[in-house]
Length: 360
Image 1 (cartoon, rainbow, N blue to C red):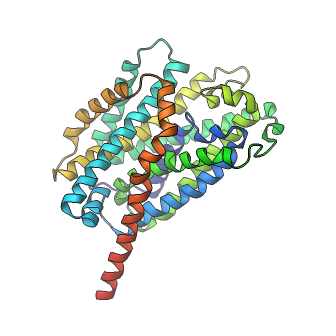
Image 2 (image 1 turned 180 degrees about the horizontal axis):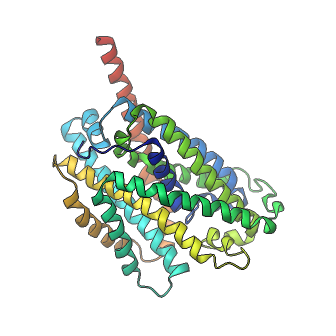
Image 3 (image 1 turned 90 degrees about the vertical axis):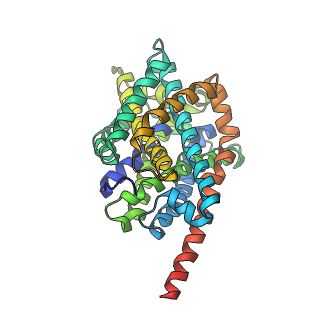
């Protein structure tokens, strides 16, 4: 490994929680099912546990190796390098989509008159500085800011208790299971499938045998937080408003009386967003360095950051174009990277370890 630092179980846990929860509170795929969104969250939790189990056991069966090393071992040098390069591109693409999500939200709700290129540069520079400082710095800072986002999410849930209407949950599955199938498929990919990027981070856990335990508990906790947010939105807004509003989580939070809630939402979004952007950017530059067998990833941080910013402003002309692409194409585009190839790699890793055991 290029980066010899180690992180604790708690640090990995808060990073995973921030990764899952941060962007999901902006674009909550479960709310595409309306008042049945809570069912989608529960289905997504099951798929999330399955996926994180696959990623965890791949790492456990290949100790000390990142995704790039594992792909080369599984597919051979030529094919492995090609697939590794495609994964790096996939991570760059995800990062640009994440950044576009945040910029779209910020420009529509918080800083309407601020040029988005300015916000993109500031946010990316902060993340680039963290990544250059190393994974340990990212993890230590996450220990501070992720608990803040969790506290704000719980505080908002409690502050709106007086406005909740439990009748908004009924009728359950009025349109049948068809209404929750598509959101459930999307949720397998976002946010859980995107956690394949943690195959670049898991080798740095100081007690590597605890990867599955830490990752699975963190995934469950983050999903429960997302469930709390979803329940809050449903009980406050109801079915009619959820279908009409672009950012229902933000609007539901504004129902808190006598508080300028925009400040809390901005803190929640930006702090959580920095975690996800940092992990993706770190994984990309580490991947590039390992692919070209270089000794240092830091020279790639700024060039990759510039590419990501350019790609962010080039990909989509509007939020609605981004949303349409995410719903119609993104799940199928990401499926090979986040589900199919990892399953194949896991099967290969199990067989390889069995062969080693039989030889011994």
